[in-house]
Image (tube, rainbow, N blue to C red):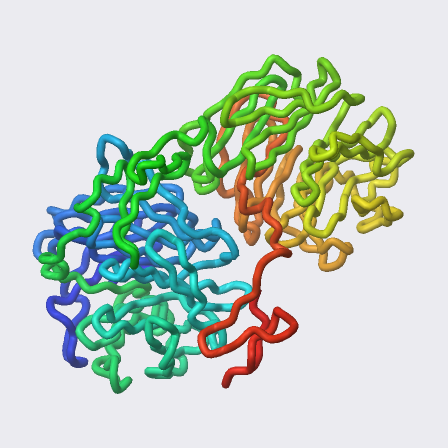
Length: 602
């Protein structure tokens, strides 16, 4: 068991079968003791893996008899400091994890080869996914099961390559923090932290039943082994075993010291005689088993070649991250910077004076305004070539509308907002004679445009179809910057150079977030806030009150733009589907009534 506080591992020799087992006989303490262990998983060759403090770590040569033989080494750094299960693919030697703040499921090979490094990893699922926490693997069948807990909880199944997603259950769930599998009888077990239940269903979502309801015992960690479901509850400081068939309690014991948060079964004899399907093909970087056989994958920043085995570099820049500019250069930070990891910082030098820029992440294009020539240029990250887009007056706050494939910007000299269609090649004026507009941002899905009026210290909202602007938030104190976040559908603003706030697009529900001293430019990525302050970039969770991570970057940074194709998708075009046993109704959004009632699921 992984203990949250004080950080330690508690081991019992053998599998408990009654309340007589003592759980504190074998204990290994971590340093520092404040480390919070959120998940634990057993691996091959006497290895044990756990997630804690923005990383995943390996304990090699695990032994309950000799703690001095332990070697703890990092497997992956850059995971959010959030709860979320890890799971080991013991067949092909990969590790998977849920990131509940970056809102994705990722994996990496545990073996380092000539074609991979310790930094090689791949994001498998990040579209239409928020707060994933529970995770379990069936490597033999090539299946992955996971839970998403916001805005409505659901349990899904996918292949271990991240493809072929299927929603198994979406009703009668509140927060599923832990999953486990019976790979022989093809059953999924889960603990609902809020409902205080342990439940089960088949691999296809059928035959769902409550195995046991334990009022007042919220379970955070779950492990099926030899017909017993083992669960731990830090709130009650207990570990409980439940018969997987009858739901009877096999044992229920108190942990005297510490809050047990995660549990696994360490059995060195498991899977020792199974042939790895990936041994049949020669993948260059990553191999996973799927229901259709072994499949090669490439790490972030690489593309799979036509031979289905080899990988090539996609571009010099990262697949996802933050692009920052100064007067003549573009830099890119990997998403792992958000969690304090750091890493390679690719950059490109231009012969231009960059006054403002934006990105088309799908096509891997940067658009920027050159103050030397008063022109807009396109920079292709694949070819690293430039193309003149159009000439214009001095421009500020360039932004990209991916729904119409057009650029928008402010021309301060004329107090106007202008647009250029990348489809027709036509330039036009959206609004003119404004009152000192600045800080332009766009809600591309709904066609809204937001900006700050420096003359009135107010935030205004217009539209791409030129409807009359109206005030969203009036009489602010020195508003400086705006950012529309497509994920939360909220408008974020920087007030008085230090207060980051947000509101709905109509100005309602104003919330205060982080205090960002001397901030000049703000941005939002998934569940994180970020800002520039001098030569530093800061990151913090949206629920925090102050900076949590900071890096000194380079001299005179000007703007930060989030680079992630998922955030430039037409989310309004998503297709609704229904759970097993239900049918999509005529309205194309509602599923037929089940015993838990009808529900709309996008």
